[in-house]
Length: 575
Image (tube, rainbow, N blue to C red):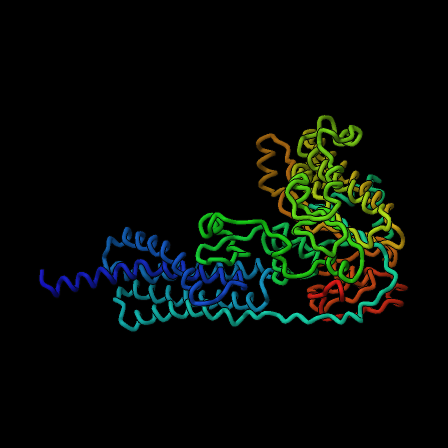
């Protein structure tokens, strides 16, 4: 073999390998770029960008290389024929992922990033059409690719990569303006109690009200304000409860997942959000992750604002609220209850006393457990015990002297009960099917709502006047999907479990509240500005929501002007 022929063979092999590996390498680079879209706080410097491209690009390049070699058997001609279709498939997949994430994460990403992600999807989709059309025309005409076509392919590759690199222009840090403390007037305010319920829905509550099995909720409906809460786009509990607590969209408060993930290509920065639907958490990041905490939050909660303007505030069982802020008088985070009062970052003298209030399933009052039928399931008893513990503490705190100015308590037990029983309730109450197998589960759900009615009524009685009570559920239980009901019916089983989430609820009751008012769909970010107004405090301009003035009666609106401040962020206790 001559030197020239050996050189030509080596050159053909190199081109074949490069063409075979390029689609996978490009896909990995675009995937790495997507992480920088979803995590705007990542340092967009050459080192992490190159590291991400190599980390995801190299494995996919090897996969692409092996696939092409199998399909083309190493033929350069066949590789050129396959190349535009492989490249087009990568572009089409990237465009689909960009469009899906831009739509699904509309409230989790800064608007600039979201728009740029849509533009990326459109640009890459056009690249896919151009490449596939070129490949199809050459295949039909059985034409070899000219140097112009080859240059075109690599120009398209460059454009797609540039569209990822150029995304940094879409994101700018918002400048937070300090508030004017002189505008935070001191005046008599109502006592505020906010009760969070998991999975509560009017689909169960309204029938029970009509049946007289939820008298306090019936009173709120007739004498207060009720409305449906728009279900969150993101299913993570941490994000939804933090949105309610801060009045800001997730891309502003920074909690977009229940966990933070270690990025293998970064030494210190953690990822807040991962691509969805790709199983990315199993292969795209390191196994190291940790739950989000209040330290990861980038916005103040309502209880922090109230504490720093001089009000006494107590928090019981709210997610993503530990470590405890020093300004809050009593703070018992969700972590405290989940770990049985053992592992917690909460501080203060209440910790030891709070453990004494713990309710255990085996020690629940028999008259209480009897409400859920004979020999209720262990999951029901666990839910009751968790809520009973929080109830006992909330009653105790509300009865203290002096009483708190604001009390936040979350009761999570309904979620587990609804998950196990809502399908039975839906079958009987909405489909009209009298299934003896589903009846006990439906009655357990009704009994739990009735018990929560008594719990909330008891808390209301503990609050000093004037007072305002807010009940909020970020999402409600939804009916089981049709395929599940059909399958259970075919297999002879009763459908008892819940399906995808539906709208949540909001109920506001107390002094200054318009009686009998029914709101339309309420955005969760509207809650904080509305409660600030209810307490006679200025509403911050940097909140994502609006003040729901329809909540208040005419006399309140007439005597209390709506004051505004630029922001509460940065507010200190001395302000």
